[in-house]
Length: 111
Image 1 (cartoon, rainbow, N blue to C red):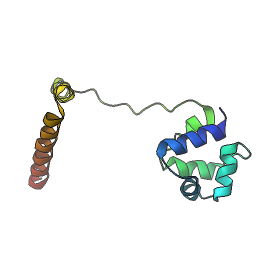
Image 2: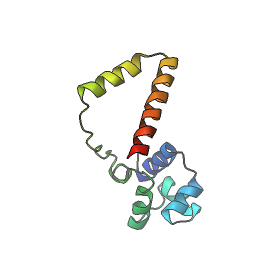
Image 3: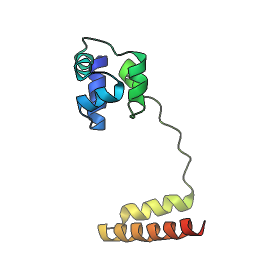
Image 4: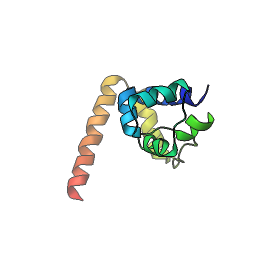
């Protein structure tokens, strides 16, 4: 895979058309097509702009994914809650979501 292939892969991963992607990167659709075909290489301004869309620019340039942001470890209570949710049926999951949404809204109002 080359830069153009990885650029197209990222665009498709994000579900964005070539036209919209080009616009977000500050170039014309024709330039986007050239980039994806490997006929031209994007400049830094374009790469910075598409990074704001969630493109993994390191991957586009090198083929290696960026390291994910470290996520704090879950507490035992959070792990148990997630485990219960995973093992619940669809009805139970919907009920849990409704309860947690209602409790969250109450807390936000009180704050």
